[in-house]
Length: 68
Image (cartoon, rainbow, N blue to C red; front, side, top):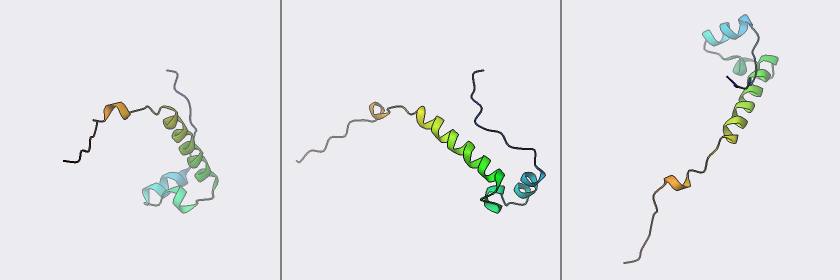
């Protein structure tokens, strides 16, 4: 399908337990290894989205201000 892999998370029971408890891993252990993986995936996702940016200025109507 030509879809890039942006990252992978380990099968770690702590991810499920913390998420189920309402405390995401990145919030509980912001400097931990799993948090680093989440952050790296987020960065890669942001880069891919930025690369897809399009010029949408032609989609907006022209606005004219006149003194009457």
